[in-house]
Amino acid sequence: MDKLQSLLEERGPIKKIGVIGMGYVGIPAAALFADSAEFDKVLGFQRNSPTSGYKIDLLNSGESPLKGEEPGLEDLLQKVVEKDKFECTPDFSRLGEMDAVTLAIQTPFKDPKDLLPDFSALEAGIRHVGQYLQPGMLVVLESTITPGTTTGMAREILEEESGLKAGEDFALAHAPERVMVGRLLQNIQEHDRIVGGIDDVSTQRAVDLYEPVLTKGRVIPMSATAAEVTKTSENTFRDLQIAAVNQLALYCEAMGINVYDVREGVASLKGEGITRAILYPGAGVGGHCLTKDTYHLERGLQIAKQADLDFPQEPSLYVTARHINDFMPEHMYNLTVEALARINKNIANSKVAILGWAFLNDSDDARNTPAEPYRDLLIDAGAEVKVHDPHVLLYPDVEISQDMEEVLDGVDAVVVFAGHRQYYSLEPRQLQELSGQTHPVIVDGRNVVEPDAFIDAGFVYKGIGRGDKNGHEVK
Image (cartoon, rainbow, N blue to C red):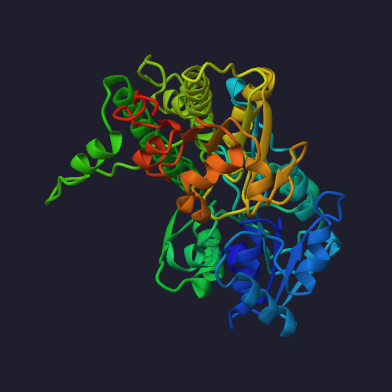
């Protein structure tokens, strides 16, 4: 009998699970594992650091540190804590008690130009696991990673730290997260789960881990590297779709037409064999995933090119799409400058209110928010900037207010960066009164306001893709 298979049968079914990384992926995953009758205990591992150690007490009291709208999460946390099925701990030595350990740790790029990811946090997590790894355990990477990482770096570190051999003494797999903030529990339960082990035995053990938490979703087994490519490419394709409609929006602005009319027309073409998955344009792309997963995929491609395989020499379509989406905050800045110029105001010394710091509507997730490079451009130009967000309470070096009236008081320009629900009810007369301006500026990056209502009230309006309105007469 295969040595690993024998060890797994000796250990028996997975009963104790460790989840490293108490964030947007790890917290809901741990809660769902703990809620399953198949598992006895789940430990969430969180460093007791100055910046994130506060999560430990919150989670152990059944409270979620994730703010914004996250249906069902806090109720589920309270349930599994009360049943003593979930506990958060900073004691990584307890990893040795687990049957399976998952790692959900961020994997950013310090500088995408060099295609070198910052795996320092992930490496530290893997080393923790390796130090306490026991024969017959399963280790699963859920982080989005460069193709080849599971069978390469992760395997090497685990073997070096433990003295054990992957595929013989312990199981190793990659099962990438596929969640969106605002529907974390639903996504984990209903989305199909990609599971890729370094061998068939590892794959099956990982399947056994994830199947109990799926409701509508199914497990799709494959190799570890194929799973890595699946995750990076699905986010790359979404980024590509967004870039396509953002480019279209820029074209429509230049041609004086409404991108939303064009979008509706394109989306109307339906029928067998027809796919026109056109998304919506906006002020920019944020979040932890889409802003860097293209570079993970591209890095994997660069590694593959070293094998002397024949590839097209054209610039990468995916990286070009990334550049388009990264340009959108700069375009928002250009629209702001143009709008202020129409009322003979210079960006320098102008007062600008940014509405929405989170990258996603009705969320507190501000990772890689496109509002930040926009704010930086304003400050560099000499503008005074205030930020409002109902969900984001704290952000490094940025003061964020939940008082809309205070933020809008005396501003020259109101700029919408997030499609939070409350921004859809903005009233032009109220904004005009708060601003104290006869002709205040509004720049809409998420199509949340009705242009004509603001134009009729005397606003100078600019909107992404609204070439039909951006050149209006000031009333």
